[in-house]
Every structure is written in structure tokens, then in C-alpha cells.
Picture 1 (tube, one colour):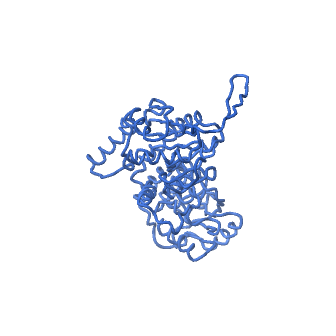
Picture 2: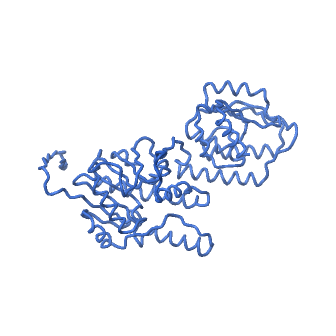
Picture 3: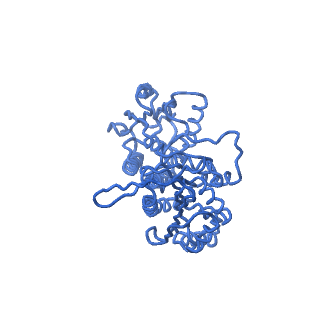
Length: 430
């Protein structure tokens, strides 16, 4: 039934309709109520029929159907924080106010389509009105809902709650970026687009939840500390290979962040999380589409390991080009013996050797750091100088953090330094 509603909604958009009413056609939904729904659409984006505003709405129903319906309402109300009757099909939509792409965020093809679609509408702050309806006994036919459908709906409700808590952006709608029509995609771009387009498959939902928790509560505080240690407020930073952007959500308040990625789907994920707070740039870290010496800093997390050492040298030289003299790079680079690396090796062994799944939870990691000396050996082939190397308990031994600077060229104009006394210490501004 969910896929049928999606087909009907898609057809209405394609045919240019501004208003759509959906209802059951066994006369449990009364056609004379349609006029009230349409009136409500003058001030609201969605009007839904409620079975809970009037105690008599379900008076003709048997005890089993009442119990099932009330149980569903209780769960959607308390888990998803929706006060509405979220499982009913009697609705009216203003399609001219609701973007078609919003319904692409709804995954369910069964009865859970109703609460999931309303959850998406609610989270994106569309105005929803409830009107009371009375549901008599069926005039003909019988319910097609099985116990298996109820169990499937309960499972999706649980997953929807988890995603709302840990990956709220999955239900956030933003207008998608589109690549230039004439641009031919490179092999790397095709591969990364495929990764980001399939990243949220349901088979990986548990991994996604664990990873989201880890990013937000373990990695994010560590990134915040290093960036704020190395860069003053208001500096211009390039997040080179930004991915979904779950980890640097706080940095837009500290610096002017430009997010660069080769994948349009990745940039769309990033924009869902960050909104308009950061500038987006579509391009490759091998050839960053900007002028020389325009950023104060470059940072990324879990990017460098996906390339060979030779490629990493090319990437680092490109970072050098776009940095101002004295600028810095902060790289979160997975080490060979990092905790997350060891965990994922164990997970892959279990999935692929024991369960025979042939599953990969992340793209191939070609160059993990073996030690500080390994990082220095790579940097020795570039013009960067290492300032700091960290591998420790702050992020539970997940990343090696490499901080390097672009030393000013020999012939630079003299710099005037002004000391400002704050009473407790002196800050130096160049």
C-alpha cells in the first residue's frame, strides 16, 4: 500500500496537480468529508483525518482493530513525538507547497508509509492540520493488513526512531545540487557517487548507527579541540573531502568553512546537516577548483588512507598550493593499529568469512599510517613541516592526527606584530 501511494503521489506531481486527496475506497472514509479537508488546505500544507479527536470515531470497530490502532498511535506519538493520527490514509496535500523530492526520503512500501511520510513532513516543518473523522464498519471487503505487516511496521518504527536520534539529517530535505550537464564524470567520481548513494541501505543500518554515535560523541570533540587550537576564530578553512559532514557540525560557528568533495551526493548529505552555514565546492582534492593561497587551513577526516602514498603526495602538494603562507593542515589519518581499524577488521572477518556475506562496510583503505616516522617519510616528499603528531586516548586511539604548516617563503615583507594585553595573558595577532 505504501508503494501504491508513492505511485499515486508521483503521478499527481507529473500531471501538474496542486492538490491531492488520498483515501480508502471501501467507504470507511466518507466522501462528504473531502470538502472540510480542502478548506483546511488554505492555511495548511497537509490535512489528515484523525480517529482520536472524537471518542465516537471508532465506536463501530471491534476490539481487536481498536487495540491495534491505539497501540500504533501510542508508539508514534511517544517515539516520534508526533501528536497526530499518523497511521491513517485519509489525507490532503498541497503539492504546490511540498517539493516532490521530500517523498524520496520515505523508504517504506507498506503500511508504515503513513507514519514515516508524516514524520518526514513534520520534521521539515510543514504545517499539518487534523480534522476529526468518523469511521463506520466496512461497507464491503475486509482488511488486508496481516500480523506480519504490523510486525514490519513496528520494526520500521524502531529504525525510524534510531535514525531520528543518531542521523536526523536522513529525514531533512534540501534541494539537491546538480553537476554541470556537460561535465563528464571521472571514474573516481562515479565510484564515490555510488558509495554515497548506497551508503544508507537498510542492511548497514546498525553499522550506520554505531558509526554516527562514534562520530558525534568521540571524534567531533577531538576535531573541535584541534581546529580551535590551531586556527583563530573567523579564519577560512577548507574541508577537503568533506563527506557527510557529521563531525564538523560545530566548526561553522568558529571559522568560515568551505566543504569540498568529488561526489555530488556527498555534498547533498553535507548540506542537509549544515544548511547554508558553509560554502560547498564540487571538485577533486587532486585539483581543487580555486586560486592559489586563499585558505588559512585545510582539514579532513578519514580521506588520505583511501589513496596510495604517491597520490597522497600529489594531494598534499595541492593543499600546499591553496594555503596562504603560514597556513596549516590538520589531517585525521587512520593508523594501522587504531581501535576502529581493528574493530572493522574483526567485523569484516565475521561478515565475510563466517557469514559469507561478501560485504564491505567502507571503501578500501590503502595507506594507513604505521607510525609517526611513516607520516614524516611521506611529508618529507612535500614542502610541509610537521608541527604535531597525536595518537592517543582523546579519541579512543581512532586517528593519528597530523598537523603541518606551510612555512613562509624566504622573501616575505616584514610583519607588524601588535600585542594586546587582556590582563591575564597576551594574545599575538599578525
